[in-house]
Image (cartoon, rainbow over all chains, first blue to last red; front, side, top):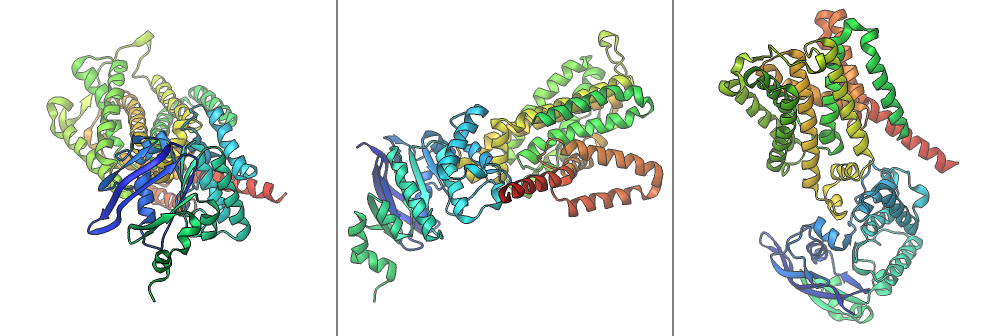
Length: 238
Length: 317
């Protein structure tokens, strides 16, 4: 399988603090990469560097072989990157349909077609019956699904999910895991930052573990979580 | 949306018949229509894109000066000078936005006051270009198709056309891709970028359109006044009034700025004649009441309430 997303030696520093230190990764098309690590490990910063919201000091990023290191976030969206935000960011004054419509307009500039696309995506995430509800009034699980719908409506080839599972109750979690799994059937590549191990183990094809800005280990999910270095990173030395 | 076009057609019809019904109240109506147009144009940037400007008097002034100086000093017909003013206003808005859109929220607003003040000083001090502090008189105007541009009737229909054009532009935008880009940028620039939107480009387009339309009204204003003074036309108070009209009526709504103009110009007129001295007091109280109890404006507040109630009802039943 060809590489969908590749990063070489990404380093991000804020002032003197090195948040991400020389991280490389390579995700094949249609696969799911899980990104885990304790709080403050640099996952979200790496995530933001890959999606363009933070500029790395060093390193290069490639999407389907084309370098995107210097592209601003909106250009990355246009070339095929979709993302969700850790704290959901719906356009609160707009209805659910309008929220997704904003994203759908990217590939479908005509109102009718864009609306159709937005409605299809809402259908997929199970929010279609609420299409005319203002986004302000949604509960957490539905806000998550709306966030996902917005990311899908730009019709990305690589999808970045930032802690989509956090705080969901067990049935909602199961639903979300099932949903994400089905996305890869359509050849979508996924990078997910996640704390919920159940989701990581069930979904990831490959896991990268970060601590203090660096990769401490990587591999298959089952192997990685039993690695003593990972346990130490999460729980500390005794 | 159809409903809006019906309201629009109805209002334009009323507007066309108005001079026959109230020939004695044309000046008030002209002021009202100009404010409705300016506030609607302001709202493209201030309401739909969420960038509050307190410098829109600059665009009024630009349009007014192009027309006045054009006819008084260079014998340029007002339709040509208005056209030039539109282009100049769009160019000005582009440069202005490039310079200030890095600033967020109140800082952007403050910068608009500062830039508008620069234009006021230029208008006052660069007499060779603007006629200086004494202002410019429009003594003669061409008579296209035998129309006397100095007549109140003609002024009125120009102002009506201006207000109608701005509202129509906003109606078209509100359902378009551009309209949704504006709203997305207003709500959350990062989330807008994640949807592939370049916030700076969207804000620049909004500013250029808003500025050009405001200048169009400024040109008509100059013909209506036939004498313009830099102190008045470039003054901060005019910028504030334009912004206030839109905010009170309801930012980011199609009809809010028009309702705001009706309230502010209308009540201003009534209070001035009935309450004389107390008029500013009542005017101020009115603004306070609206801002405190209807923060989204007279149109915005009930519209929002209605949408949520309709949805809640359907969700229950």
